[in-house]
Image (cartoon, rainbow, N blue to C red):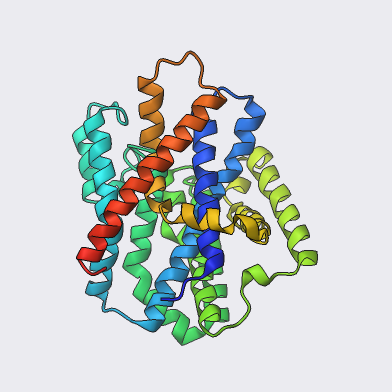
Length: 330
C-alpha cells in the first residue's frame, strides 16, 4: 500500500509531542507555566485518530476485508502488543496501586475498561485512546458504507454534527469531565472521518491538507492555538469540551509547518516506525526510571535519559512485533 508521507511524518511529530507532554506534566520539576504549555502536546493524539481513519479507509478502498477478517487483523496488530505492555505493567507493580489490581488487569485484557471509569486510564493515562480505537474498529464498516453512500462532503458534515451533538449531550448531562464519556468514539468521530475523507482524496490524487497555502495556514493555526489555549485555561469544563476543533486545527497546522522543513522528514519517519510501541510503553518507562534511579530532582538530564531509554525500548519492541507480523502474514 502506498504510504502517505505527510501523515507518517505527522505521527512521528505527534508521538514525540505526546511523550514530552507526559514527561513534563507528570514528572519533571519545571515551572508551572511550562507544564501548562506542554499540554498542547496532548493534542498529538488527534493526529493518530486522523491517521487511523486514513489508513483503515485507504486500505479498505484497495482490499476490502469482511467484518470478521478486518477485526482479526486489527486485533492482532493492536491488541497483542497492548496486552503485552499491560501484563508487564501489572507484573512490575509500579503502575496501579489499588487493591483491585486483578480487576484492573482483566478490564484491559477483556476490553471492558472503556465502561468502568476507575480502570479506563489505569496502568497509564494514555490507554484511554486504545478503548476509543477499538470502538472505531467495531463501527468502521458502517462508516465505510456511509461515506460511499453519501460522498465525502456530506459524510464529513454528518460526522461533524454527530460529534457536536455528543459534546452537547455530555456537557448538559454533566459528564464532560468523565473519561469514558468524553473519550467515547462519537466525541472524535469527525477527526476519524476527516482521515477517511483525506484517504479518498489521496486515492484520487486530489490535493490534501499539506498543500495548504501559507497565507491561510499561518492565521488558521495561530487563531486555533489561541482559542485552544483560552478555552482550556479560562473556559471551564463547558468550553473546554468544545476545544477539540481548535486543538486539532492548531496541532495539525504545526505539523504541516514542520513537514515543510524537508531536512527533518527522515527523523519523523524513523520515529513513526515505532510510534505505536512508544505510545504504549512511555508511561511505564517513565515511572520505572523515576522509581529506580536515585535522583534528588527530576531535572532536564533525567528527562533526556527517560526520552532516550523510552525510544530504545519502543524500537526493540517494534522490531520484535514487526517480525511477528511478517510470520503471521500481516
